[in-house]
Image 1: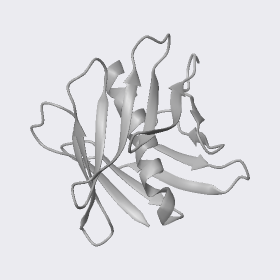
Image 2: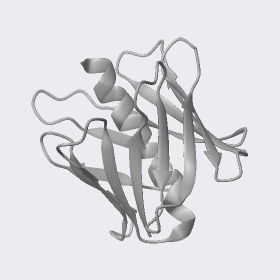
Image 3: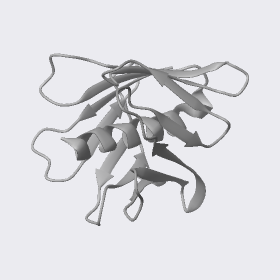
Amino acid sequence: MKLLFRQRFFSWLDSYDIYDEGGNVRFTVEGKMSWGHKLHILDRFGRHVGTVKEEIFTFLPRFAMYAGEQYLGNISKEFTFFKPSYTIDFNDWRISGDFLEWDYSIVDGTGRTVAVISKELFNFTDTYSIDVTEDGDALYALMVTLAIDAEKCSRN
């Protein structure tokens, strides 16, 4: 399954629409006022299905992931000098990517590719393509993409 992650124009808070291959809205992401990033994920029917919330009193950026109200795990930035690196404390996943963080993969503990994320250049807003191997991992791959994008936005 391929998802297209596109930031909305003229949004004061982080807000995104996530489309499937047919151009249908699969998820909507709404930023909420809080200290740090707090992103609510809604399904295509407008039901809250997840949250990505920045934990603000940490040395390096860390984001908690929730399915509904249930804590799933977190993604945190690691201390490195040149190549940004992230650790995922969820499903034994790990991230490998390029220097600019525009193209990266999520891989599980067995080496199976869970998702491939690519930034589409030359768009007016942040646009990513998320190619998910299994439909059931789409929400979680989206959460990882949102956390990395929010961390990059905080640096700029």
